[in-house]
Image (cartoon, rainbow, N blue to C red; front, side, top):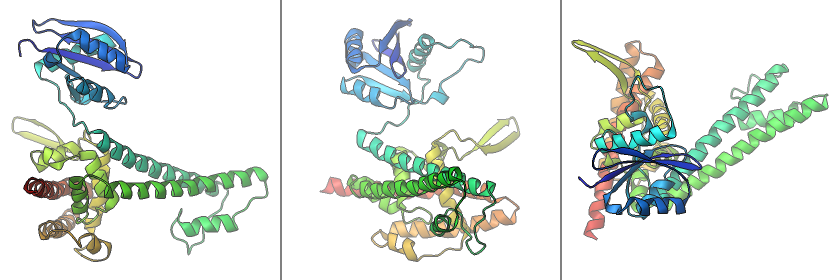
Length: 377
């Protein structure tokens, strides 16, 4: 370790600020280079043998391209969590040079927390899942705009039509709602078109996610199928969990997975006093959203039928047993917390956090079974 050079990189879309923590303790800036592959290759040649280099940079909007470029050149690289980088309370000067030097210094001291870096195929699946989330948000906004537009002009749906934004509601708007002023009619047509376009986009992306799940590597495909044994976790939810988390066995235990989701309560304890507050929200927001959505299903009594029974058809008895145990456990927990006077959002947040323990158990079991079969073959 005495000859290891730690390289801190402050990465932006067009430039990279570079600093090196030398083996003798000196930390110096090497200036700024263009964020281009040829410039990175020249930098690695300049810094010396790749076996003696340890690079790091913050996770951010530039993704993992730099990580893949450095690892292809033989340099060990870490992508670190920005929120877990130590910060001095009195430091009020922030520049690219100082950020790069700080990364190099902290990397040498071992004070940085690396994040999991997916491979290119896994990253592609995650981008597809997040595109579907963006489409869902856009569809919701389009429906809201249409609804508010109609409300401003005193147009309300019939009392027999309970769901706003549904297909019957949209058909009623197209057939029954018209304006005398051309400007208003054009506005209505545009809002309706956006709602229909959002629905088509969402259908197209969900179909693509299903195809991507079926063509995924065997281990990933097995985990996606196994997670669907749980109530509230259908194909889209299972693919989202696997895309955001990666291999579940990379977590030593369920508690670490819960912490990664940001669903654990924050805590401030000193002496004999222990205070827990709202959830930290410092983990993966996409995983957190899926878990809270899934937790709402446990307000209903345990039940097995319909699509849930169909999803469990070809799964192992061990996975089915875990899923059935989860239904009984979390429905009882839901009723108990409701009797204690907790509000429903608090209850489903707690259930979503604990449900991750069952997801971890199913995922690790499935991955171990697949690795055992692959080794035997």
